[in-house]
Image (cartoon, rainbow, N blue to C red; front, side, top):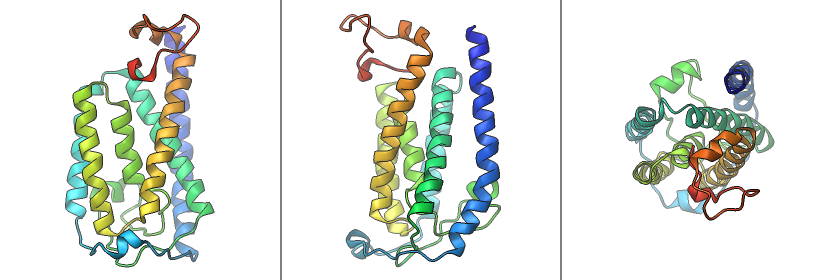
Length: 223
């Protein structure tokens, strides 16, 4: 039964990936073609814009590499990370649709060779703003990191990439704050949902301080 459950989960993730891949290019092209609101961001107004794309690139992909190095063989963790990423990116399409924005003043295009080739077909888009995809991706890694040392590392990476995004002026402050809040909610509920649908994971958790009919505290629950 457990094997079939894994197969179904993987199939669902594949279907979600195919649907997202099919919708994303059309959605992002539409977002670029429509006018949006230009926000007065008091924090960005006092931060000079500079091209720090190289540092964003290095921090992001080094963090992804570290996460994969320690967790690639952990099926439960990887399923949750992939599901969280797909779900957040889908939600992001809806929030961008509902909140059309112009890029901030001082906007410096963020050139990402990997992301540009895989997701954006070599083009640079500037209106996929609310909420920050970079911030949400880094938060996912932090949330699902397994050990305290890994969490500290990914928290440091997140803390470094946020000011770089602001210096690049590719997002408003509200985009970053929104990314953290929405990412936390999605990861939290996704992990709880995964626990309820995979009760065998309960054996991995110490329940000495929990009642049999209750979930263990979140700080004890690790995928």
